[in-house]
Image 1: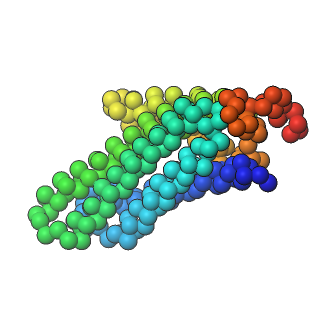
Image 2 (image 1 turned 90 degrees about the horizontal axis):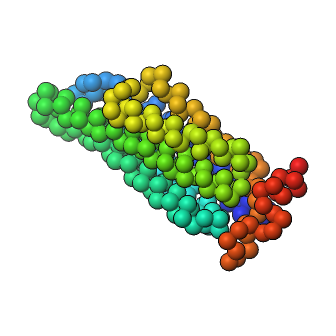
Image 3 (image 1 turned 180 degrees about the vertical axis):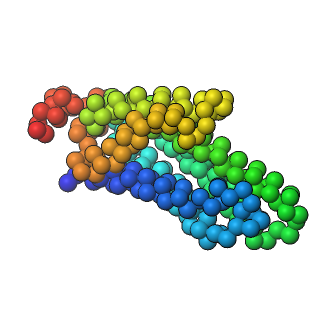
Length: 242
């Protein structure tokens, strides 16, 4: 197995780990997000800390997917490759801010001796910060970065089947539409509009399983080439693979 195919397997594994860390982290955060008076009477501080640790794992794997793919992706479009790395960094930064806001609630719950009413207001403010980071991270950044930019990159390079890349090109704009509707209070998270994220979820899941199992389809171009090698583009790779 050559270096690029090893990178494909690592890329796929990291993408699947982003699912694991994000889902587990969200489940662990339930008490502080659902209990309005958690900052006064909560009792799951360790659980919230574990949720934040999962978010650290999410940040590492998010950026890891970009770092692993970049040397391969830049051969096809350095602009798209750099854009995706940038979007991954911005998304991860926003995720970290959300985690820090919930850890601040834990700190206030443990150490603050202020009036209960004031603490409740502070807790609600910090939860609101987390909610908005969730919209801007998994909402806007994912729609633009993982959906549109990465979808276009995979379409151009042929590293995965183009029918699969279409999921990103379709799913990204749909995620953006949902995020905009939530931003202007047209819909709320958890409403029927959540169906708009299904294509993006399928796209990101396929980006985990396909490279992990099969690797990338198109061999990289020779050094200095701006296009894949003659006769070894996506169609040729498809013909020889099956």
